[in-house]
Length: 120
Length: 111
Image (cartoon, rainbow over all chains, first blue to last red; front, side, top):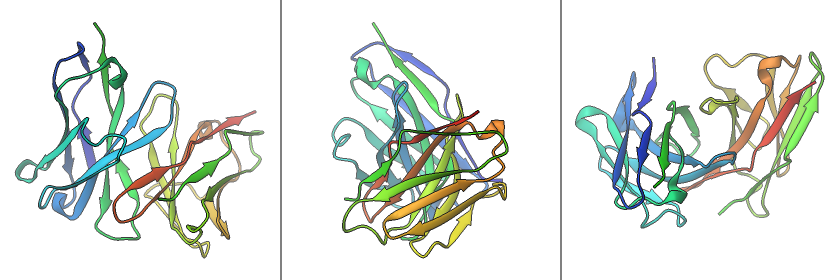
């Protein structure tokens, strides 16, 4: 069974750093991109960026480039999303999702989400 | 980069059908899209991949009530025999070599 299991909810203060994780199982982790998607409270889905776990190559949305870092450790089938200095506006639910290395393949499995709350 | 346009809401009676539309921006009418369902308080769920030809492939466990079709730049999701659990937000998604794009989502209400 394909699973993407994300780390638990986080409550942080502005200026703090954070790394959340997404662990894949039930498939070949290095055969799929992992994307991160933001959903702010009451809003829609926003694609943030993705990583190729086989070589850690990344693409970022211009809206998120420079604000977050996506990384992966293929030895433990885990992708990460991290912030060096959180802002209140980073409060959102964050999802990971996988995509096969194929031009015709969509995001086809999603993690359960990680709620990040940033408040002083 | 492509842009996806969705209406904000749709409603239909229990047991009836509803057809949602996702429109691709000019110059991108041949793009493949995907439909995702997000029930209240839950993570999104992949429903299907839909090509410009109208051919679609559904995800694992997606009921037969869900089907897809296409016309030009428009991609459709039809839900037949609408059930209470179909009340959700529905997002279309497309992608190219470097990015993914989501539509703004359609909220489906079951009357």
